Amino acid sequence: MSYDQYSVVDCDGHIVESIPEMAEFMNERVKRHALYPSRNRQGVFPSLDGMHFALHEGNSGNERVTASEYRPGSAEDWVAFLKQAGVERTVLFTSEGLAVGFIQIPRYAVEVCRAYNDYVTNRFSKVSDRLRPMALIPMQDVPAAVRELKRAVEELGLPGAMLPSTGLPLHLGHETYWPLYKEAERLNCPLAVHGGSNLEGAGLETFTNFTASHILHHPVPLMIALVSFIYHGVFDRYPKLRVAFLEGGCGWLPSLLDRAERDEGFFDSKDQPQMHFVDYFKNGRILIGCEGSEKSLAYVAKRVGIESFAYASDYPHEVDLPAAKHEIEEMAERGDLSKEEKQAVLADNARRFFNL
Image (cartoon, rainbow, N blue to C red; front, side, top):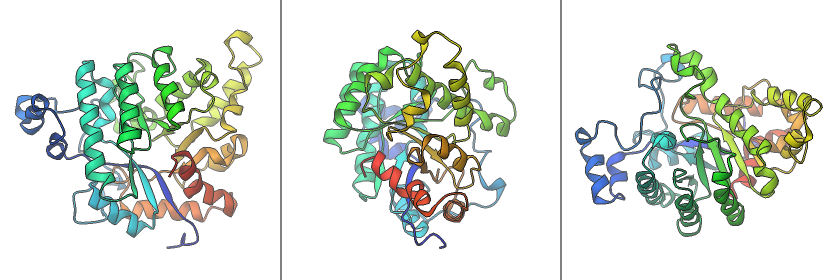
């Protein structure tokens, strides 16, 4: 491997859930639906949207090469992936649970998040300490979300929790969710806004071309989330809170920087955050997942600092084993970043941000 001189930490890999395995950690009422899906056509989690079907895969339809003969996205497959790709460890996010924000019954959200967290602790964390799953928390019931975050971090040893980028009735910067951010700051654990589905009400639900939708449906909700955290005062109120923005690359950030810098001089100071937009990136509290081939990385890193970016594999979703290795090689071979900057993106930033 051409990147042997670098250590690599993956800030965004994916668990592919086995619902029968997860059912072992559910209460009896929910377990019946998980084990016998004919009783519940929707499944354990809601559907992401009308776009995400098995028809669409990465690698332009080429045969996918996974890391093992185990089920792709299982703990055993992930251990094999880390070894073959030369990756030190990975922060893992849900697949099915990317739709957790669409659950409309709060007590069900509480139950399914708790079961998920018990499941990934037992079936992933305990298989290898190189696998670091992020928790799911029931944002539909904020006090319960605070309790579950505390349990996930202090009792289960999970590094932090995912926030869904779509589905919730309020933007993520809304004061309704502030008790959760207060608890995350107290626990010194990161939160991560993770792209998943189409953003309802933005017109994407009318698209009939998957690639067209894919260009937008990850980065646009991340843009909304970041702006809400800054302009609705979350980062000012909780100055030690750390939040990652994942699955949309980093190319969406220059547009926000330009708009924010322009608007600082045009609008009422009462609508402005306590610092300049760019300054919220200066202390490492914001992390953005990126791939090796992103041409905008060097440019945007010069504007906000290299400490805000980390390598994300997305394995085993769109990226298979050869593609993941190729993207790491692309990062290692870039001519527009120094060796120190490449090491920061490939491992150091994620290791610091997620307390690995």
